[in-house]
Image 1 (cartoon, rainbow, N blue to C red):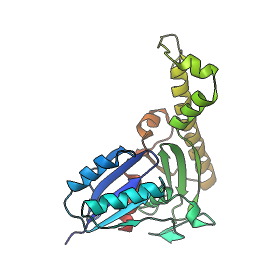
Image 2 (spheres, rainbow, N blue to C red; image 1 turned 30 degrees about the vertical axis):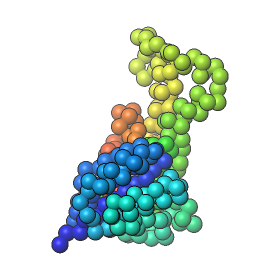
Image 3 (cartoon, helix red, strand yellow; image 1 turned 90 degrees about the vertical axis):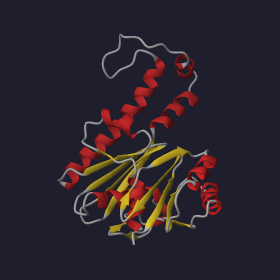
Length: 251
């Protein structure tokens, strides 16, 4: 009999979930993090599942809300993913494994298995934060990095400056700018944050090619992945459900 698993990924901005049957993941759905009421209604519409696998980086309150939503809708208690020294053939590269975010750990596992467990992979998530993690062909996590995502960059500029914020309000689009540039402050902020993130990803991937002697297979996920993708020089595979793939491997 095929086991049915509910996979849940609670990030800093969104709740994402999908059903896995026999290792195959169904359509991923997503809601804003604040909309737990609608998420609970969605859970009521699901058929009973055998188990629930979840990862949550949004804090204890969000994890508690998940448990309450599952209990209220008659689903099993969740098995929460935590970062470990080793899991599913992948070895954590952090000295203290728990310090690697559980969502990054799941994405790394998901990427390595999606690539067939024999390739160097790079899991890139572009959301509230931009994260990048590398796993080599042998399953060793070789480290990663964290930077502000495009939204945080924009908020920082608008919140920590006066002149830029004033000029960004009510900006009008023109037609004088060169390709890749902007001719009003609002668009300059948006485009600058996106290009900064894209340049960071491309630079890291180029370094990996030189250091490891081979191009990694890059998996791109996160809420701003589709916006960043056209700006990347590197070849990437868009995988919105990458963290859920990691959860599915553990199930």
